[in-house]
Structures are given as C-alpha cells and as structure tokens.
Image (cartoon, rainbow, N blue to C red; front, side, top):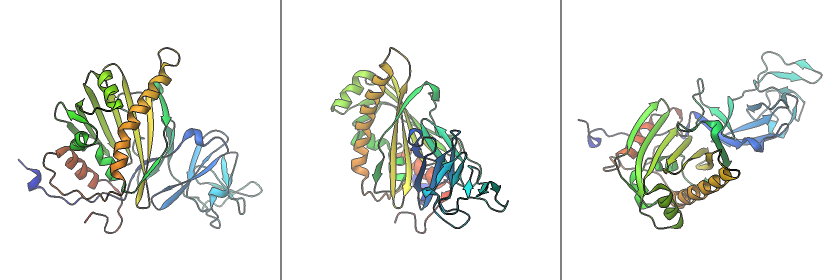
Length: 330
C-alpha cells in the first residue's frame, strides 16, 4: 500500500483556478446598471440589459480602448462612453446611427450565470463546468442572504483548505469528530468531505449548536474548482447551508459568505431560521478570519494524521488555471 511518506508531491495550485466566480449579488445590478469587478489581475464589466439578462465583458472597448465601466446600458447593449459603439452580451457590436459593426469587431466577454441570488462569471479556457450549488437543497427551496465580503491577506487556497483540515476543527472551532471523515471527488473539479462531529466549545454559538443538534452535527463540504466552498449541515431538528465564494485579488483573496435556509413554515419562520443560521455561521467563520490574516500558506507534507487535508492539497495542485511564476510556497 502506498503511504503519504512514499508519495511526496509539490504543492503548486493555480494562482487563479479555472472556475466560476461569484462577483456580485444579483440585487446589486438592477436593469440599466453597470459594475466593474476584479478577478486576479483582470477586470470584468457587468451590465444588466433592459430585458433583465446580464452580460460580462472585458473592460476596454475593442474600438479604441475606452473603459466600458464608464459606459451606460442602452436596450440590450453596453455603450462605450467615448464614441458610443455598443456591445451586446455576446460581444457583437453596433456603431452610432444603428449600423452593425464589422464582423471582425468583437468585444471579448465571459460566460455569465445567475444562481443563489448571485452573478457568476466563468474564468477559464474551454466550456464552463457546473455553477456551484448545494447537493442536498434545491435552489427554489432556499432563502438566501449575501453577507459582507472580507478581504484576507493570503492566497485563496488557505481558507479553502480549512474546510478539509480536520485538526483545525478541534483547535480553532471547538469540534471533535465522531467518525473518520469520508473524502471523494464525485466529479471533475469538485472535492467533497463528509463527517459527523460533536461540540467541544463552550461559547454561546457552541451551546446553541449543541442544543439544536443533540450534539450530532452531520456536515458535508464541497470545494468547487477552488473558487467556492459549500457547507451543508444537518442538525437533526434543522438543516442549513453556507456558501463561501473566493475571488483572488492581487496577492489577497476576497471572501463572500452566502447564508441560506429553507423556505416555508409559519409566516416569518424562514426569516428567523435565516437569522439564526447567519449568526451561527458568522461566529464559526470569524474564527477562521482571525487566523487567516497574513498567513503565508506553506504546508509541509506529509501531513500525518490529517490525510483529508493532504488529499485536498493534492487535488488543488492538479486544478487547471493560471500559475504565477514561483507560485509554489518555499
């Protein structure tokens, strides 16, 4: 049998994985609005046409290079502020006066989708994979709330790895595993871990979790191509889910939480459950924020006793995407 010590590897994940990136809440882009967002070293200009569809284009106009983030929406097009050339979501252009731009004139753009109350953009070569979501919840049964983005001074793979770090569940979060975690890759670009835990912490959020769950918390974590982590928790009396979206910006990562709960029940109950889930998940991830700031992520393998995390590191190192020179930790 091959052991970790017999199979060394170099941890070398992409600086920006080929993945879907959550760039903005859908509510922040009403009809006629234009937003500029950054992913890694690139900018993306989002606009919502009058029909309600969303486009995602490269920032500088094909015609003369003016920044389209300063433009405006006209019907189904984003109009350049300089000479009023306009571009639809597929990159086809029109020139002032209503004529079609030459066939050779194409504004580069990106695949875009809306899911779970957010706007997602695909950054990668080849056809897009599935937009991140939840396994045990259908989208239409969920009530969602987008939290405030937090900027961490570390690479994207530092907070992503936390979901698969079984040892830090005890040292940081006051949880103990009741059984060994199950780790698999159910489809290309998605890694999953499932485990059953109990509460060892003594804070207010810990006591609430212990009471709600009967001290049996079943958790399922998925990492989607390195850009998104979803956490689905079954507490027995209730179920909830959290999505964490990672957007690399320079040498940092912007982390946006999306809190969810199931719709239905008595009037106002879904909102109450969402508020409780938001409180519990916020208390949980605040602990990670405290230890991630300024982290220079450089795992020394093999990671004896933390095989789930080492499996994640191997998986992340094989992800397609952009790799900066000398990107692997020293």
